[in-house]
Length: 226
Image: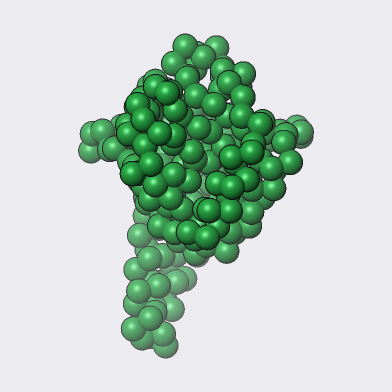
């Protein structure tokens, strides 16, 4: 499931992020590239241990913790601390699949990457190229969102970022281990939850909605891996 979540950050929040990132200690993205990705990665990244990366990343996590659509879609168990990157001057990231198992920085905690997320911090008219292209069962999906919007997609997907030929594409990216490992089961729960919410808005006291809610939680109980 590929899902666009709009306005994760407000326009004002995006402007504040950009002001901080203009002064940030950007580094060559090759510094954090693995043996395979180093051959296709050409971008800049923020030092993960810098104060600004930690502060902005924590704000993103706090915001998502209160976002009902994100929670419904991801059913997060663990979230990797958000990272930040910048593509400019032909910068790109060739086709790759994200690592299946990752370590949470500064700990011995591992995370299984079920979902990947990119939160755009540049508007589309600020740069040329830079589309996040994701391969799924429906073919190649090109994603280029407004600043503050986020795309959520399976980490198992083959994906790449096309060269940025003008301007700069700035974004945050991170990974989620879901309570529901299986993508098909997670999608079914998301569809069921969204339907329950829509029906509840129309008739909150319906016994049918109560039964559907019970079905949702019983499926969550059966399928969850925590």
